[in-house]
Image (cartoon, rainbow, N blue to C red; front, side, top):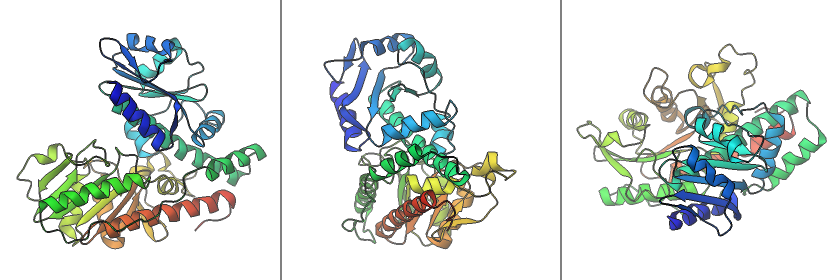
Amino acid sequence: MKTLLDTYSRKLEERGLARREDISFAALETDVTWNRPDPERELEKIFAGMSITTLLSARPAEPYRTMLDSLVRSQHHPLQARDTETRTFLHDIPVASSADSKTLLPFLRRRKGVIAPGPRLVTTGTVTPEQAFIVFSSMIHSCFVLYCLGYLDRRRKKAFSRKEEQEFEFIMERLPPPPALGPPLARGPFADEETVIAAVVEAGKRTVAAGLVDSYFGNVSCFHNGTIYISQTGSSLEELESAIDACPMDQSSCAGITASSELSAHRRIYTETNLRTVLHGHPRFAVILSLDCPERLHCPDAHRCHTHCRRERSVAGVPIVSGEVGTGPFGLDRTMPPAVARAGATIVYGHGVFCAGRTDFNVSFRRLLEVENTCRAEFLQRARNPSFRN
């Protein structure tokens, strides 16, 4: 178990989410094991108060520390983000007034994580350290989206201070640079199942390395010889070697049971177009701009934009559509595939970007990267010049 704690501590550090010295990670087997020799003994009491096996407490690295501090000061509690990861996974993000176990327990019984003073994020897992890691990274993603949207609103209302402006610039200057394209991915068309799977694995790794998805959200697929090869639901996109399902187009196999929840949307793309690869990520600035609608404050459907938006919107020629995960009446399998068929890419409101290619993942990855970098540049334009809107 100590090896797993060290593995996910390293991942937090490698992704710039927390420094190793600020991470306390514990797991309960017969006894509580920590990743460090000076554990937070007060937090061990949480294990006795709820049915969990892992606990993560970490102070985020900059610029996320400053972002969280500003967000906690400027927003009502619990934090109510509008992105898909919050809506379907986190629900809301509680904020605690103290870091003692007695204060944290009620929040952690209700939610997967909590913001504690410091600021620190305290997250839990019921089975493995991986779960606490996922919650931590998802909370950072959702809080960043909420912070940026809040700053845009205050700028437009001219209700911001000089300190807030300085904090914003500090945060933006310390983000990782825009991702670069890098060397080409495997060239298609692919000859057989083995090369298809290798290409899907490679595309997943590159997407995570470029910061275009938080590992466990997003999906990758390739259509070959009547079969969709797609990442499994809940899989890590950087570790897909044993997490790809082969789903026949005629649905003659039950492999789809463990496939990505968006299999039906991928299937529709392959049924109605000659596209052969789909790459889906949750890049932060594309998500932010999809949520930044000028009519939001006055729209009668503002409380259900993710399913009922009727306004045609786009960023840099990429359409923004509504749609929720799944196959219900407002499922993105109804809205996203037609948009991808028209434009080769689309942004789903509050969710992320879907891009497609005809033979391999080179076009879809390049488009995903271009969409995010364009959205990043436009977000900064909007934030620094509130009258600007593309």
